Amino acid sequence: MLKTLLLQAVAILATAALAGLFAGRIGVQSALAGGMAYFLPNLLFVLRLAVAIAARRAGAVGFLIGEAVKLAMVVALLLWLPRVLEIHWPALLAGLFAVMFVNLFALLLKT
Image 1 (tube, rainbow, N blue to C red):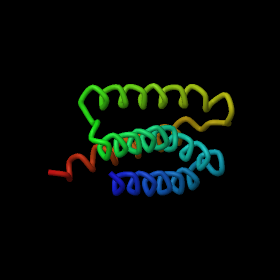
Image 2: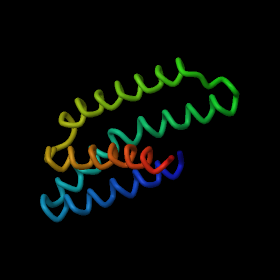
Image 3: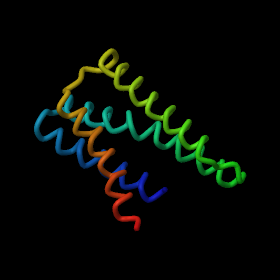
Image 4: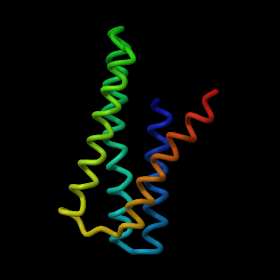
């Protein structure tokens, strides 16, 4: 889990650097915001899951509820971001998709 979070952070930074080349400061800001809109709820989900596993209370229902809350938080952050930041939408989506693809890539590697 921690390796995936680290890879996500690296993906956010790499995407922000690329966005900065194409869209300047607003691109960097937008890519960071898009990546963090997924990373932060995912971090909270992973921490909650780790606590549940340590307490031997992890189960499918708790996992699904945690995933639903995480996705609701992502949507809420994505709706809130344009109200507080000037957004370059392609950069924001690039940051968001980069983090999401790291999750997919990590699942494919873990066989």
